[in-house]
Image (cartoon, rainbow, N blue to C red):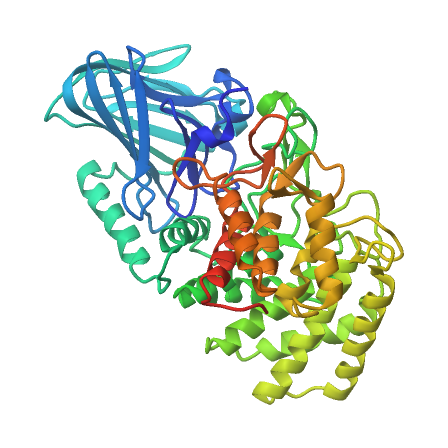
Length: 583
């Protein structure tokens, strides 16, 4: 295992992202998009699968890092007996994907520090060694369809182990390294100026963050999570990637390793609601437009996830040349869950669209046509078993939370018709809403456990049911909701964190925020704040969260950073601060 996941920080340009380790190594980078093949894949293999390390020759005594203000410019300070250096890592924003730059700049703050740069490019997820040569600007590498140019003021050398440089950093002499990916069949677009691009990149993030309307105790915490959502939002289409990584395991050393570099309807819908509530309507609008395009076709063809451009076919395959993070194999790209049937997706879309309308966002003229078609389909489809919010690959069942979200879809259609005068068979939908509600309460609630349960007529708990008061199915003070929250606290909590369901190895971080939010809505603000504080304590030193927390390894687990975790944090923090309410 390379390093614990929390030892990484992300730098990105809203199209791609690099993971930079605490010791100065970029161990993951996909270009030109989040879902493109990686050229540095050490994170999921070993050094032979590609990396770029920039560090002092003499190991540092201390290492500290931070983002520069509200940005994704990473500052890392490394101090050893020779002095102190600061490395800036960032990805300048670009207008298109003809060239994707990555800048690393060394500043010596004290003394004279001997430094080393080691770059090993391995295209196609760490598999293909490019042809590398030196030129007057530095070095370039090519293995179609990829090409990379590296510019540096220091002398470079090449051998079988990559592109190398050893140099001395002195005070007052910044030393920039500019790497640019570009398509191998096209002309090199040229290098960005490191100083100008630094100023431009800092200004972009600062201008965006200043528009945040959130204030109060949790603003700084919320702001970093909002920045994560912005960094994962793909500008050409409005899609929001669930994470910039694939196959970081839910359970270390095991096989639950999935590709999250796509746009999940559920995760993105929760993200855009957080963005909309925080002063970013244009980000929400971009996703709504993407979603309208993706939902073309019959409602039965709605997918839980799509590619960043709206691709529907995301076939799953295994990369057998990669050993996997912590030897968690197989390493997968693509995600077979695109073909699953998940009822909750319909509810998430309808809830997101209703939130947009009530916020005053002007949606496309055919918005209601989409909503009407989804609800008409659900009039019969809600009775079907599905694969659940947790994407169960063991077969379909009548999952309680899925039925609740079908209820949400119908409820939001009724609310839209009543509030905005939209046409539709509202009386029929009211009967349907009541029918679903009665069935869920009869078959999804276990009297013996005094709790709603994972699937009809069963007894197993499911932390997704914490969202019952959050989506308005029942009020937080309803005895059945109180019983459900209590049962989950008693049976699915460990060390102050929440498991998705029994016998799951790690805590699922979004569920911790859902519990806190449910408690706050029920008036138990003290416990809600305790749960929230425990959950945000899992963030790493630069404020990033993954999907899960491994109890046995005492570290973050799952893909990183994860949009759903950060969107859930924002929603919960807003409720705790009294700025928003459920549903």
